Image (cartoon, rainbow, N blue to C red):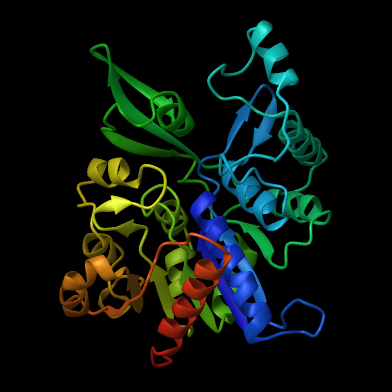
Length: 333
């Protein structure tokens, strides 16, 4: 069984933890793992160079979570973290004082930056970093070429273009985004290993990640939609919206910026039905959104109504199981 997942950071990590647990039960290998092969195509549109270091927030969130080293209370970064180096950088006036990197986290960024400067691709670097962790999946950056998401905002009457992380972390997305600008997207191509993974997959899943700046960024890469079109595997997505609110983060502000309602049905129609020029065969929504199931079905997308809240390992694994079942229910192309 080959499974390819498109994912962003924190929400994607939580879903992947559940998927890994479920696969160990559904297709066990006898050693506590699974015979299933899982590739995760990860958004790198949040990436940046900061204080001379390459920072990949979504890749790291997933790597730390699957490696058992993440801070579960904050939902991001490393557990048992200290911040002495960031304090010193701030004292020197380097970096962003509102974007604190922990000391253990900084070691990851130093290692990544060193390997990149040695000439390795981001895909190769990610594989090297993942070697120390027992992830149970293969992490694939969406592209080896840099793409940075910038946001146009107005602050104190003045138009500004800021990095997505500044809008997300410093302003907490409280300043309305006029538009998102994908710097470098015109030169970037989909990771060839990700394309190959999609073409070979038995199942393709969209994690409940931000549909605009996570999954949306991945889909905008040259070659990505074509790979999805060629794929014979069914594509099932999990709604990141429950009852008109984002499960995590600030997807509602991102959706508003592109003129999409913050509803499970609107996001499904934003992705579109695969048979009608979109990318979805199946869509999972929560019970609270069941009244919109007919609307989604009318748009050509098979709809499953299941509990979406991932409150613990059990509910996360069940959601992964439901996502696979929804995909399996789609006739092969």
